[in-house]
Length: 520
View (cartoon, rainbow, N blue to C red):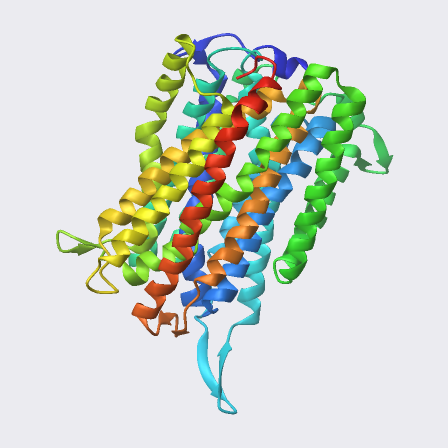
């Protein structure tokens, strides 16, 4: 992104006290999250019930997928900063996402279990399995171009020290969760009453709506998100090929790479580790070689705080994998005589954010006016503590259940409540922090690093989810009691570890605040 896009508002005019461009970003991201979370709510069930993968293998695929989803924004941010600009990057990402979600709707026949030489084997349709992997690859690349850059566009609407910035990002985050709530509910019920293709098809239509909103409303963003050097994009490299079209072609090559990676998941961990080390060195090198003292300190604090996400998302993202399966297998989901689909509970977190995000936005502003708003490092510490408490409450609820398939629904809801409050202390605040502490000329790259740290946490989440795996036949758990005991053991450890990290983060908060040099 060009520096002006971060240091000055992108366009004139306001809506409810915020720039009008926020409305465009709000609805674009709302529909993108509708498609993403609608599909994610079904994914673990698609793997275990349609393709009949074991819990452990399904958790590995899930973790590799969501970690790759958060790696690609690093590349998308850099490409947008240097070449495409955020507007073109968001458009490209949306097109790839539509293609990916449409591919998911082609489910083919359900896998079948058979006995071969005395051992159970699973027969899957190889064509539709490859369509599934290719669809995931398209979604991975699409998120890479869209996710980091739509958040960067939000940051470009505010001056660097605009007191509305945190509130704007919190409202933007509420838009994310309107989409997430509707996606999980609608796709979850479509799965229950129509099948996987109906749920995945709805996700594709949601992303199409997001692209239409963005194309029709991007004039409200003004000059924000335009290419830093338009002439470079049009430079001819070969007959009929310029820089812009080369980028589009390379993005398709990237899709083919991710198509293979999602099938060879052991490589994903190595790739992720390499990216983490490389980007950490790049940020440290840039901070010391290109920044003045205050900007250098801010960049390093920003980098350090990003590491908290590995713990937070590694535990939080059990929501879409192991916790989703536990809800299906061990939680009493009958309300007023009606059994709620397990996938629909993916909407609870989003519903709480919709209710709580405006309150948190007003809370930060109110505390800021009184000079007692917690610093960003302290908010992160509070997030980790609340995350741990949520797990411990669910563990307690499971321990008092009289039947291993009838854990009280209230304990699951309380977990989501505490996890949501923790999320509101780290995710929107972290997006805002990245745009405030980063040097304006590399804010897109730093936003990509924020999502790279999220990727590390998501990859860890898959490894943790695999620890909760149970024996299954035909996608159904063999022993519900043993499965519940396994969940309790893993979630208890997760709760105490998260609280411990949170207390340590509290102790470090004053030191980190000092090196932020007045930026909250």
